[in-house]
Amino acid sequence: ELKVEQNPLFLSMQEGKNYTIYCNYSTTSDRLYWYRQDPGKSLESLFVLLSNGAVKQEGRLMASLDTKARLSTLHITAAVHDLSATYFCAVEDSYGQNFVFGPGTRLSVLP
Amino acid sequence: DVKVTQSSRYLVKRTGEKVFLECVQDMDHENMFWYRQDPGLGLRLIYFSYDVKMKEKGDIPEGYSVSREKKERFSLILESASTNQTSMYLCASNTFSYEQYFGPGTRLTVT
Image 1 (cartoon, rainbow over the protein chains, first blue to last red):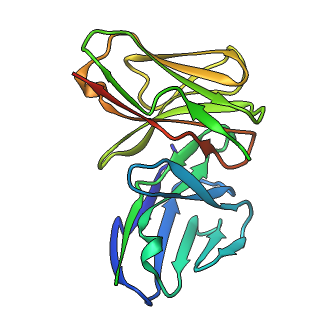
Image 2: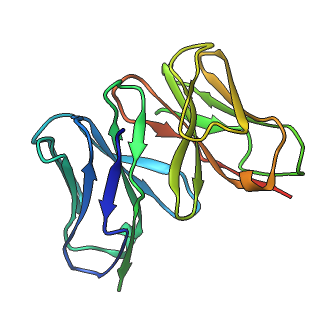
């Protein structure tokens, strides 16, 4: 059974600082997705990582995938308040039809 | 742009009522999903469908049924609503091995 973990679950950081969110999963997969959710809103796709070593960057966020370690990271550079949200990773199962979501990391960026 | 729409943003129903939640996508996606999201429990998959008239149970199908008569439309049915079904319901769609696109969500309250 595919399980997905994230840490930390809660993250409070100051503007301008760097930090990394980790996503671990339990079985072989080479497809991983990152989403953002603002309070009271739905999920918005951030990154799609489809192979070992994949790296994607958008603004202050950079995501990477290591399929051998079953690990993805979401790195935040010089955080700003607008990045405050909950971030989910999701891993596609081996059948290619189902996503398993991590529990989410609630990020608060303080001025 | 991919668009996933849900029939209601907010819904209040009484215990025992039959509830229909509808989801429509306009991108000809094969797969459609229903999740519920509760604080501290993350996203949990209720049902998904990979083709018209096909459905698969997710992690928490009890108390729910689904219908997919047309490719673009996926309905979630609560046969007899109960208070423990008060939740945020999210619909999503994708084509194989691509990210899921989410609708705006329906916040259902059962009293």
